[in-house]
Image (cartoon, rainbow, N blue to C red; front, side):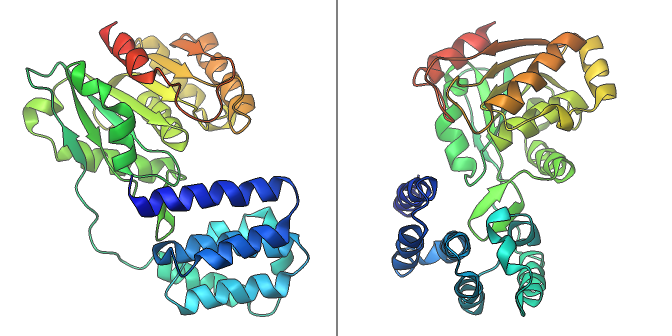
Length: 308
């Protein structure tokens, strides 16, 4: 993780804490003050500030904050401006719709080709490929750091960046079809011999949802199992025909959902139980006290899972 990203995440935690306490003015000030120090996060910080300002009853200032960021080169995908309830008060303001369309046009403009997927190989012969999908707001570097134990377990570790961005610095996996295309491109970058190895779909949070949906779809490639940590998935994401077919072909999976993970627990556990009821062999671990993160002993857990 770069120092810039670490600093941004530490700041984001402070802002979110003030959100939770309805200290919106302080949250907005934190975001605004940080802009000169974190220029690569200009769009993200403006969005955080705008949300806090809007919730604090200052929608005109919120819109001005977004407009200033746009004029400085920032952008947002339409969904982050129109689907965020914190910004609902801006919808009726003159100029908001124009900003949404201008920012979205910039967000969807053809971009330079992204970097190739990150690939790490075991020292000896590989016995499989683990495709690790990063969480929302992360990238392939985070996935490599989290899933590195797969290499020691004899797997090629393949970590692509999602091509889907809400802001210049925020990647996620909102559209499963686009996510599958990203995975296909990553697999195509491997030598033919690696593509023939058994595949495991793996991911964290939004990446875990994409990993499960890929394993259920069984293409591209043919993942035989999934490992999902804090999957941001609900029953609404499941295609019952795909679930039935996955059970019939023997798909197995392992999921870790923290008992204290208020972000995804209540949606993920019913979805995982539905997979089990349909016949997918899915081990579900709910560690006590664990929030929306990896358990501290995850490398050892992953090694045991891949050895099975």
